[in-house]
Length: 198
Image (cartoon, rainbow, N blue to C red; front, top):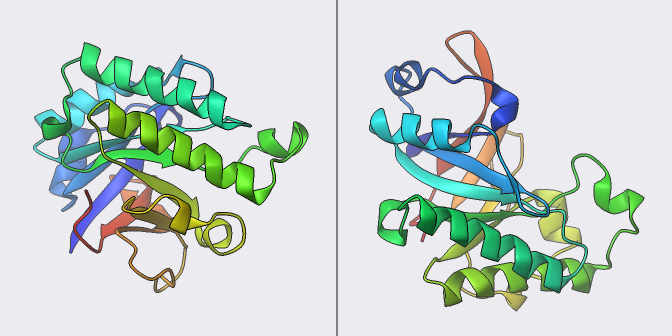
């Protein structure tokens, strides 16, 4: 099993050699969020992870409230990837659509119903596929069980967040098992690759 972390600007400056020395095999780096917002440490993190010899993927934190907004998010992500030369063959861990509401934005703006949340995922995935990138979905076990219909986006791998001793979502490709993985005295989200990802 490969061990990994996911990172964003919220992690501050990452010592990627220390990450590699801790036995980490891969990193999934936040490219951006919402309406065309680039993560301020995206380039630093993706280049640092690659330089350290880690396998990489990227994720996009969605604020989309409908499918059209999700399509715009996907176009922005792909534009950035192509602009910096990160073609699909250079992203072994692929592209991931982060569907959650960690900061309550969706709730404050009228939480979409379950079908709309599912359609948002489908729309993002389809744009990525049309532009040459395979795409999976990141969500908590609760959202996978109670909000999203994963049958509506067949073939998209699942990255399940369940901070526990085991992952209960069948067929999970990547399992985020903790938000308290300590590396070099700092905390990270810890992940395990359980299956062929993309």
